[in-house]
Amino acid sequence: MRVLALGGAGAMGAVAVEAVLRLPGIDELVIADRDLSAAQRVAAAHAHAPLPVRAAHVDVTDRAALREVLRPADVVLNTVGPYYEFGLEVLWAAIENHTHYLDLCDDWEPTIDMLKLDAAARGSGICAVLGMGASPGISNLLALAATRRLDTVDDVYTAWPVDVPADDGAEQFAGAGGRPSAAAVHWMAQLSGTISVVEAGGPARWRPLRPIPLELPGNRRGTAYTVGHPEPVTLRHTVRPAGVSATLMVVTPSTVAYLDGLRRDIDRGRLTAESAAAKLMKPGVLRGIRAHATAGRYAAPGTLPPFFAVAYGSKDGRRHAVLARIDDENARGAREFTADMARATAIPLALGLSQLLDGLVRRPGVHAPEAVIDPDRMFRDLGRELGCPPGTSCLLIEEEPLARPGH
Image (cartoon, rainbow, N blue to C red; front, top):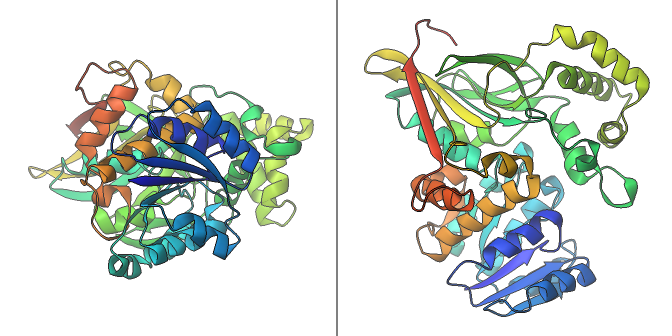
C-alpha cells in the first residue's frame, strides 16, 4: 500500500513516520507537509529505509493541491491540526479520492461533523478511523475493555494525566516563534464554554473542570476534572452507557485552580483561548498566587492512576466497577510513554494503520477506534512497544463489586 503522511514533518507526524516504517505491507511512504524543507529533512533521515520514502509539498487549504497529493495514496495518516479547521476538509477529500483515512482528532465538535460523513465514506468504499491516538484512541479501547466485563453499563469515564506525575513544565506549551502551540490553544478552548458529555444516556452539555469523585477497584479513590474531548461523543453510540460518560483530567489542586482561573476569564471575555494559552507558558505572579491561595478548594486526585478508563454497571446482579489501564509493571516503558505526548499519540496511530494494512480494519464508513480496532491486537502490539514480554498484552483489568450504589 502507498501511505501518505499528511503533516508528516510535524512533531507527531515525524514520530508516526518512524513507527510506520517498521510496518510490513507498505510500498511507498510520502511525507507531505506545508514546510517542504522540513518534510525533506524527515525523508532524508530515513534514506536507508527498506521502502521508498519521499517528501512532497502540500497546503491543505489548497483543495486542488490536497486532492493531487492524495490521488496516488491508498491510505492517509492525517496529523494536520487543528482539526476544527482542517479535519472535515481532509476527510472529505479522502472520501472523494477513495483513500482510507486515520487521524488524531481530539476535538469533540469536528468529531460530530466528521461522523456525519459515514454514508459518504461507505459509498466510497473507504474506512476512516477518527482519533486513533492516546486520548482519544487507546482511551476508547480501555473503555471498551472495561465495559465488556459488565452485563449492563451505567457510567464510563476515560482519564488522562496533566501533571500527575509531574510533567515537563511550560516547554510543552511552546510553539514556533515563542507563541503557544496549537495544542495549548486547543486545550484552553476545551476548558471553556461548555463541553459535550453523556448524561442519562443522552447528549448533554456541562461546564469544563467539573469535579468527578471516583471510587476504583484496588481501594483507589480521588477526584478528576472534566475536559472537552471526543470520547463521550463516540462511546454514547458504541458502548451505550445508560448514565454518564465524560473525559477527565487527573490533575493536582494547584494546577486545576490555575486552569479554573483561566477558564473563568475566557468565559467572561477577559482572555481568548490564545492569550490563555500564553499564560500556560509564562504564568503571571499574581495568577500563581491566586491559584496557590485557592488550591485548597479543589479536591485532589488521591490514589487515582494517571491514565485509565473505568466503567460502572451491573454484573451477576451486583453493581461493579471495572478499571482498565496500562500495566506499568510489565510495560517497563509505560511511564515514559504517557509522559511523551508525541510518542504516546503517534505510535497508536501507526498501530491502527497496521490493522488496516493487514485487512483487519477495512469496514467502510467513518468510525471511532472502539468501533473497528481490535483491542486485543492493539494492546499486544502496544505492549511490544512498551517493553512487555513477547506476545504479552499491556492491558490490565481490575474489577470488584461496589458496597455502595454510587461511586
